[in-house]
Length: 314
Image (cartoon, rainbow, N blue to C red; front, side):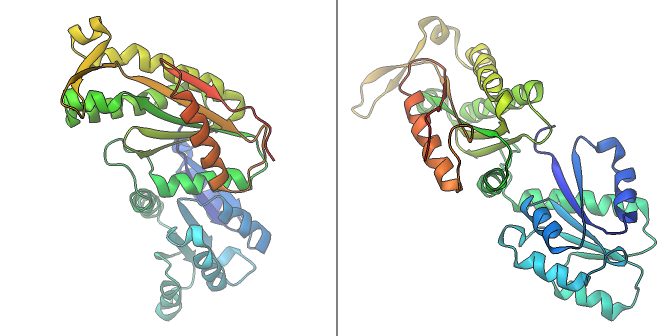
């Protein structure tokens, strides 16, 4: 499942984690439940995941739940991550103290499973919207892309980033119009989704930077297969978005800036791959610089291209 929703549950005792696991048993491919203790290191590791939602079992932890909420809100990446606190204390003043810490919900125990389930679902959906989901493709935008890249940079696992964009897209828009161009963007997103679903892993991520630019963050071992499969799917299906005459000619005629008709090739796709296999990245900026460089090289090669950066870094 691409773009799995991560839910961190801070629960030393474990009863709320067990309950949540049972509620989402049938949706385990969509929701990844991560249990953390109330110890500082465990919470810091959990915050590094930048989850969709944080649940705190106030009854089942050794630390002060109010102070934990304050810690979470001071974390820049999790400043808008929704928090649910659950506990047996029903005193209104006590519950209001949590709301003052910008906690979205305090749900008293015993927990009603259905109410708890839909509260989690709805808050998770809202955070997707707040993190700038693309209206066109339904994919996460730049804010979530940066968060995901930060998570990979700060981790110790091998990963690869695929930067993807289209060649001759502007010429297509000029001839066929923006509405048809939007359909091509959605088609490209679907090609990437299908390739990642076929060869990828549960925690792979797919984002839409904007326009015809996309980024996929995947396991290093699968990246080449995914990148080449994206090209295969794109090249096979893109001809359906052209007229028969343009497909036969293998080009479109569009007015250039001088007002003269100019031939432009049919759209192709460029996939630039970078990874921490050959260079240890310390910032998202470094990733972006290398990605832009490799993508620029890929776009100089005629036709759809997969290009991997294997240069040893600093």
